Length: 221
Image 1 (cartoon, rainbow, N blue to C red):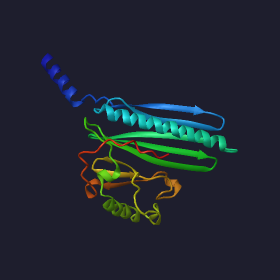
Image 2: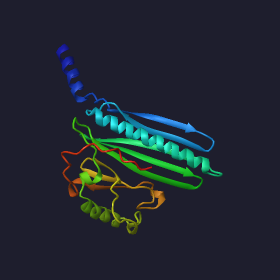
Image 3: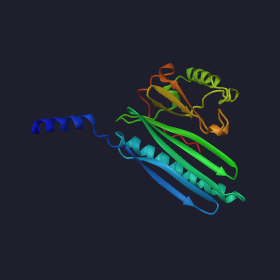
Image 4: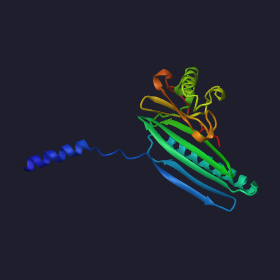
């Protein structure tokens, strides 16, 4: 009986493996003033293999947040009658060694609403690098696939408004698909928020550069 219990215990341990420790934690910044409100969630990385890259990612995110807070403050002080409400959301998507940080900015001023999205994509390796959209996908092929997707659902998407993906279009790769995240109003009416378009990655895949210097975190507010 004792041997049977030990065997069952061992089987349960193997059946439910311990989840790997996260390489980041979510932090919060809040500021509420008479002319504006700011509420931001953002990731802070503390478990990446490449500590230099980790420092660049964290510093880049914090610098952008500080600049965003300054801009919201200025806009709030200049606004008449309506306070500025700013909500910054974030998510982290991991696909093997590739990590994508999705940062969404939501601004409200009276009856005006705007949302924009960008991503920071990098490899969690000792020699990890930042990766742009054009590093991982053939842009020409990507544009054709996006056009097909938009044309297949004309009730949702405004195909006429699409010319090409921006070089800084937010993206992530997960489960064999490349997903693009567009800004509000960019390819659809505002009711659809920030639309996502997913494309089988093998259709547009580009071999990632083997040697590329770390680049500054792209900044768009």
